[in-house]
Length: 282
Image (cartoon, rainbow, N blue to C red; front, side, top):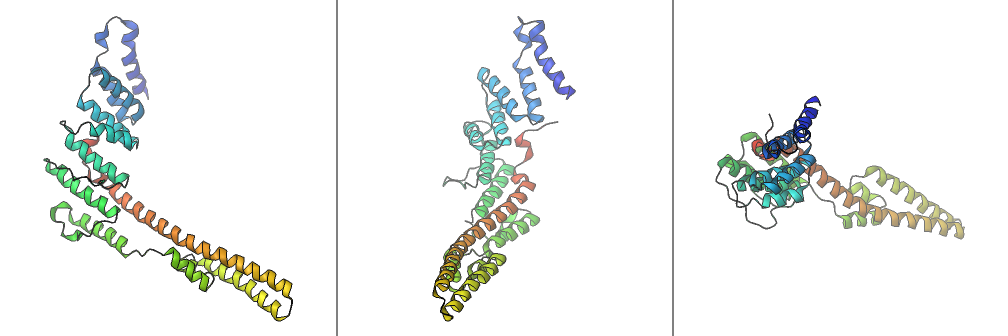
């Protein structure tokens, strides 16, 4: 914290001492302060400093750094805008790779665009890995991951293949089938979606009111019988609809679980993006 205050004083003191000497307020000094804020993870203020310098002395390095700030703040829309500006600059390969990372984070795929080309072999390999990861996350690859050659090392090939197989083996639950099962046997649809507690409860409650209705009809207590019949029907309609919703929720929760598992794995690998291109701090 003391270092932070020292840098602020270092930045501001010349303005009080010699306000007429603008040479002391060089862009290099302000850039150093912005770099410090970036390394301290104060990305919002760092981006403001970089933007202020960029308005005076526009260059690709500053634009790239601003994009990194927004990427670190998870402001992916703005980050992509800045990286897109660098498509014909010396930072084009780094920017394209980071845009692939954003595509993975946003589950966007490639939006039908062609895959970017890279001259740098490390970036090319990273882009192939990321492109494969995007396809796995979007469930659109049929590639045998074990035969990917040099794109992945042996451990990563095994991990990728296991994740892909988990996604392939997972069976979605049909909401219409769940509703049909519950229409035939109360609670069966919820048991089908592995919601066992609710399924058993639905079967017991609906069955109880159905039995009471039957028993009262047999005893010629028609008024009570119709009340119990209506109650049983009400619970059964709710059970059928609940089974439909239960199947939809099961699918959403399973997809989220698989995506979180894959996201966690990719995060541990830094999304296969070399850390050097995401800003270095001593």
